[in-house]
Length: 63
View 1: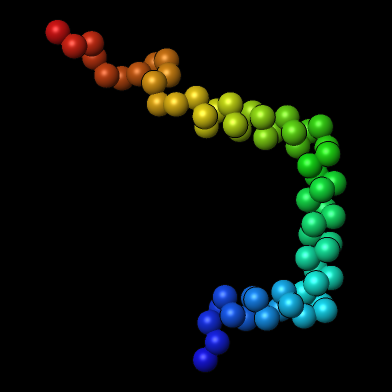
View 2: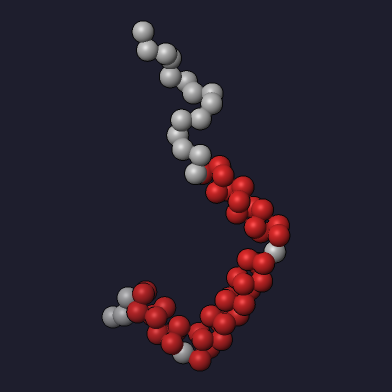
């Protein structure tokens, strides 16, 4: 019995799968060029890469 990954790989190699991959790739390239998308990515990167030691922590100061 073929695994789910094997079925996905088989679909990706098929002509219909190749067409779907081309469409997804074109859409991704179009979205990557959009200034709104770039702004959202930059915002998410800024929020998630800020580290753990931000302001508003709840740990009391050491005595």
